[in-house]
Every structure is written in C-alpha cells, then in structure tokens.
Length: 419
Image (cartoon, rainbow, N blue to C red; front, side):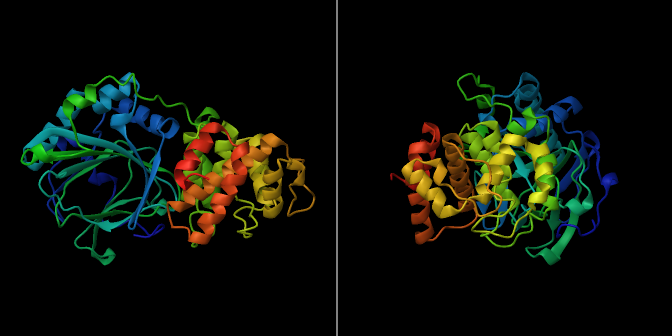
C-alpha cells in the first residue's frame, strides 16, 4: 500500500488487550493485541531507542531499514527487566504457546527496527526450515501514525501487492504476532513521514532447536552481565532536546524521501550518514550536519532539497555550528577543496556561490572531509559505485587522511582498503 493511500480492513478496534487476544486464521494464523509490555516499559523503550541506540542500516533488494540487536545492548535496569529478562521472555513464550497451540523452545532473538521516510519492506514470506524462526511478535512503539504517513504492517493472500488482505496501524504498545510459513506474505508500507520503531521477538519451535544459529540465543545468554560491552551515549539530537522525527520531518516536507535517483540525496542516506558519524564518535555538530548534508544542493547535485532562504529553520533545528558546516559543504567548489586538502591550505577553498562564505580553517576543512566521506559510505548501502567512482573516492580519502581523526581514518580504511 503506497504512502498516503487510505487504510483498509483495519482500525484501532481491531486491537484488544493481548491477554484477551484470539487467534485469527486468515490470511494466515495471527493475533493482534494491546499492551504486550507494561506501559512504563513501552514508554521508556521508545525513548531509549530514539535517543541511545547505535543503529546499523540493512539494505536488501526488497527492504531498507535500520536495525539493532538488543542482545548486544547495555540496557537500563527497567528495560532489561521489562524486555529481556528470563521471566519476561518466558512469559511471552508461554503466551505465544497458548495462542498458537504450539510448543516453543527457550530460544529467542530480540531485534529493534527503525524505519525513516523513504524506507519500507516489500512483500515477502519466510519459509522456516528445521532450526529456523517459526513465530514472530512485532511490538510497535512510539506516537500513533497518521494513515497518510504509511508504515503499516500489511498481510497478503499471495506474493503480489494486489493480494492485499489486511493492514495494521502503528499504535504505541500494540503487538501483531504471526506464524511463519510459505504462505505468511507480509510487508511494511513505505514511510512518507514520522519515524517507526518496532521490537521484533522471534521464537523457535522445540523441534530442530539443537541446530539453531545466531541471531537465536538461549535464554540464559540474555542474563549475562553486560559490563564488558560498550555502553551507548545519548544521541546528538536527543542531547539537544529533539526527537529524530522532528528533524527528519523538515527533510520529509522537502521531499527528501521521494527523490528517485541515487545521484540525489535521499532521507535514508542522510540518516545513515548521521549514524555513521555517531559510530565514528564525531562531535555533535558534525553528526547533526550529516543529517542535513547537501540539502542546499552541491556541485554534483545542484537541485536543492531546501533553498538557502531556509537556513534559519535548519539553524534552529541543528544549531549554528552544524548548519554552517552543512552550508560550507554545499557551497564548496570540488577541485578547490581537493587542492586545499593536498596542500593543507584551507585558504585555497573556493565557493560556488556569491557572496563567499566565511573563511575555512583547518578544523573546518577536516570536518568537511569527514562529512563528505561518510555520506559516500552511506550511499554505498543502496547502490554499488562503479570502478571509476570508487577510485575517485579512494583518491579523496588519500588526500583527506592527514586531516582526519585517527578513528575516522581507521574506519574508512576498512571501507576503502589501504591507500
């Protein structure tokens, strides 16, 4: 169902308390219910996912989404107890067993998913073989979407979009659980606005459990202390008191999610750039600038998402320093930028625009290079650069390396190989 198309065959009344949910058999066995989690846990989980989680983008031929394996998380005590404790997992397993009349093992995976405008999941099914996930519970978190924002979980009678059978609204602390089979065709509509968060609990039948592999974990693994695992710092947007959807809404309104070609900045690429820069442990202003990289147009993509007349709005959203970095990256004349990197002389940077932006110092030069390279890495998730483009990016990295932070150098060398 495309973004903006009216909902069909579903409304909020379709959801009853999960404790009272009943099995439905069409188009395949499933249940829908409210309050799978205590309210305080659901609220805290949404806040944590928006403000702390270090997301990884996963792009395949039929889907594009951000993911995080909660097994790797050092969660606050309330969330660990409410989402991952042995008692919580066994309680969910027992509820699933009763609803689906099946015997399930003490084996789980729990993954968080995030979709931003421009992302979605196409129609597909999962064919569980021996040792594969057999049942799934999807828990929605966050403010209820307007129907025109898309992002509905949808069920189908067959493998084609025309086989649409039912859709479910994204209601905070609601759950849709279903049995996986060759006939469990499902999808998530592409988002046109908002940010969609879900927790995906996966379950395994008892038979074949001895051959399960990651991401499945035995229940005792969930209670291993996480003191040795990396903690997560508050995301730059959250430190500024914003939510991610408040920032991406500016981009979605500028049609950043609807740009059709890989040569043009798309919103998922911008969010991916932001996450990469967070992973590189860059400063807040660099990370936030990554979210708006190229929005005023660049030498390679002159058609802007936003006119420079909107600078004040962007400045209010991400701060003066981050916006100045965005503006500089958009204004720079590429060949002059390369000369400046090669000679280590920021005064060589020329502007494509008049009036000329404020002078660029060595620190700004390094931040611009970091941002431009991270954006190129983010775009690689969607399409393969050709040999000529790949070689050009390696040359840019070679010029930029003397100016980059050591951690950024190390990460980018893994992407491009040694200089």
